Image (cartoon, rainbow, N blue to C red):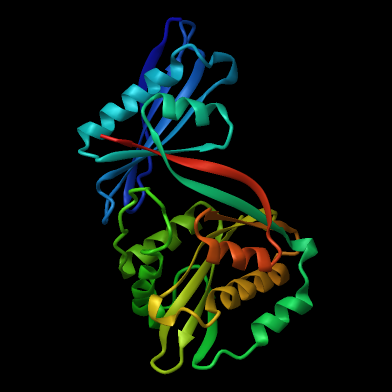
Length: 292
């Protein structure tokens, strides 16, 4: 098979990452596959994240290998230590990646909560249960200026979440990065909703949960992360915040189908929270890592 690999230019870089791309085409210039490589900074300068697709008809003809070679070469040229890639369990990619030297480092469990099935009475009981020394707060879009500094500081709650053998590093968060992330969501037309637990003793944020909803208010929303600072764990704050996030989505978006969440298989605590709130498993993916 005559194959041409063409580097492409991504017109928009992220606030803390940039993306490289390649198009594979056959002798007649028909596209047969693509590869995207995201290069991170801000504490993750060692990391590149690969997304690779080959048209089903063109698989097992060397297209994926050629695209992978181009992406790995670029990762090395950019002084990356490892390349991450994800594949659904039992999919062609789940066979392709280990055959090309990647090792499985993490299993992710995905789940969905149908909003039509939400038990609002049970949610209200969870939300209204007193949590001594804590109160809930929320906002839409960018964090208010009065909470920006403590919200940025609370992002370290995600630093020790179970990631098994995956070398993701630790993202460095500050107020500018928090605001840039919210701006990126808004610029693509989606809505970002954040619920936080505030320590009433000093008005600092003890934990947060983020939900992104499609701008048109239909389809499914996506949970972006839930974290509680280590010094505030053991008080049920994660479940409390997530219940309030569900309640708000249910009330504000009557046409929204459901909420999606993904959790490391080894993160049994967060999986238990999701299970207790009615999320149902949908599928499993595997994270692979190639050490360079």
